[in-house]
Image (cartoon, rainbow, N blue to C red; front, side, top):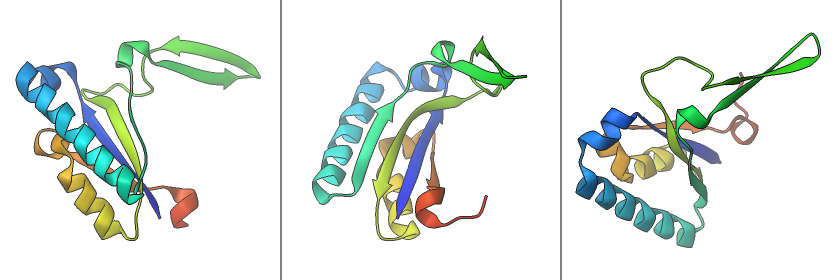
Length: 120
């Protein structure tokens, strides 16, 4: 079953740990990603651009309208995500707990609906 592990934050949160700690978080994350890749559990891991680079597309009366910024007004924004393919929800939670970001900002775990047969 596939799960999405989402890491949220904001510029204040990311800079509050200091440059050295942030570099260590990135090194530890890369090492975890490599381990999960080698075990076959990592489908992909991606950082996303700052929310200032986000665009929203809505179609109104058949016409697409593009606006700047993320979908929701929020204090925190999606910073990165991983897709893992593992045997159980418990394993997905175990992987999330090993992510260095869990020590600072938390990691949200969601089953992917088409994989988990979860009702919307």
